[in-house]
Length: 521
Image (cartoon, one colour):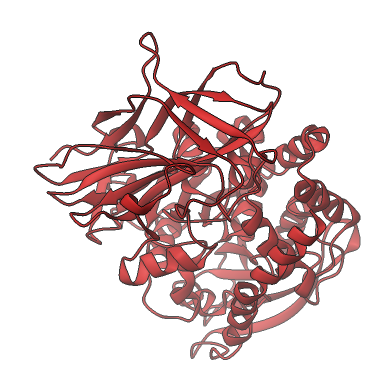
């Protein structure tokens, strides 16, 4: 496992380098708009830890008038100037904007706590400082950020009732549900975070230990990992968040390979206060990226509209729009829905008939791509990972296909796999991939998800229910859908002993199928 870990870290270095370069490029942005004032300050966080921050004030902010406050914790590995372009625009609209480097990164003190209790307490200390040293209005406070900043923002809003509005962009509500879904380690995502954190910050002993547990893939460490993740997940303190009732905007990308969109959709459904959910093509934080350079950006435009309405009382119509807003990966158009359950108005089953046995430990060629890179390509040129379905080795992959569709199928939401598995070993991993297959047999990836089992009796069948990651994808008329199930995907750690086999069957009393969620034509 040590060699595997080193290889994964090396593979992550290219993506990590791009992330660090982004942080450097952000520093080339102009310091401020004409009329705005920028101050770089030190703020004492929890336990006296010094947090490096910058304050952007609008012109005329010293006139004695109280102004709404927006706090922006930085993303994982990015410096305090990350949000300067957006902070200027918010300040031009009449906000006091305070962005700070979270503890453990760059020049801020302390160690990386991975959104632990000290990070949550820091957000409140930053608000305290802003109320004491700027014309910030204590009755109109918002918080937001991208990725790490988003996760901290949700947790802070659950613990600090002064926060009235949140914009959580490309973040997580369930940390374990993000990087350990299906009881499977999302190892490329973890390696990326590990490399960036090591290069730009100082990791705490606990975080180093947890990453070690994660890579070792030892079931004995699972409960400790789960407890660590629950403490850092807004789902754990959802009751407190609903009691405080801030207006919460959640935005994410369909292909987010660090924090997949499903955990946001589930969290959104359980929120009871004012709320909005936006999902777009892209990967982790790529939908927001151009806005960090000050370029036109839908996510940041909607973020400003959200804050304007809920902090400044602007009647901009955001409260009258459909609260669930999706952008298709295929057409690029936006769709509005009254709630998440309305996204898939109907469903259609593909029966998984017959029996198929696959050998483990080998990549069939069907996989979810490369963390960050594959979904960025899909976002920019609409080219997801591809596989030739007829050429996939049936000894390594079980394959089922639908009929050719006479009209386009608009897949919306999470496809659901139900099947029966008979293993030759007590533990194992399977990965389900859903493909759009054209006339020549070339499949483009629609969605996928991993699943790992432990403690099963070899030779005894058991049922598997697995939700694939949510998506919005249009299958053209004349194409098929294909479900491919294999045992290896480079995105994940596999738990298949050497020489293991998995048999998929469809008993008469419990037929196997994949249910495809569809939007009505």
